[in-house]
Image 1 (cartoon, rainbow, N blue to C red):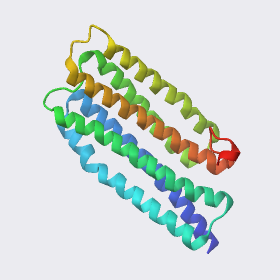
Image 2 (image 1 turned 90 degrees about the horizontal axis):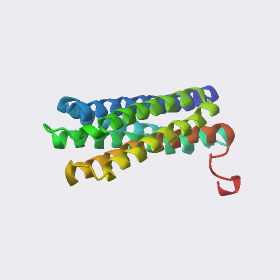
Image 3 (image 1 turned 90 degrees about the vertical axis):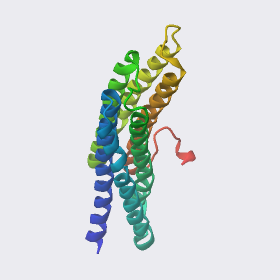
Image 4 (image 1 turned 120 degrees about the vertical axis):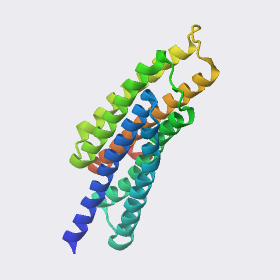
Length: 220
């Protein structure tokens, strides 16, 4: 009985890691759709989003079943709670990739991105996918040091986001209000994707150490 319980906890972690891979792939494809004005890729991301939703629902259902039937404590309890919170963050990451894909589809056959910002989004896409991969490795290894390295990668995304705004605010911007709105929203989607990846990694730190990064013990 106890061995089966431990297997269930391990399966929950594997499901989360698989979700990281799913949302990383979704953002990679959505970014390509954006940069290459590729309608087929955008449609693929949009069609596959339900798989991420289903994965979250499955992880949550199994986590709540463990809470009800096994009454976990200490590290096991932290693991189950972390699964519930991380699954929510991962679903939101999938939704953000979905938003990118829908933007590409909405503007097709016209490109969404003016030339001056394409390089920024190419790099933001790379950073986003890197963070999804890092989060997956953190879940599989429970490596606290690696989890904390996501903060540094998130700083890269924040820097790109800030520089993007310098382009938008430049007096020489000549691509109109609609393009500026699209770029602003898209930049926000990538920034939030990165923030959620950090949140997922922080949940692993909580499982291992009993402390959530950025909070004092009294605040937990």
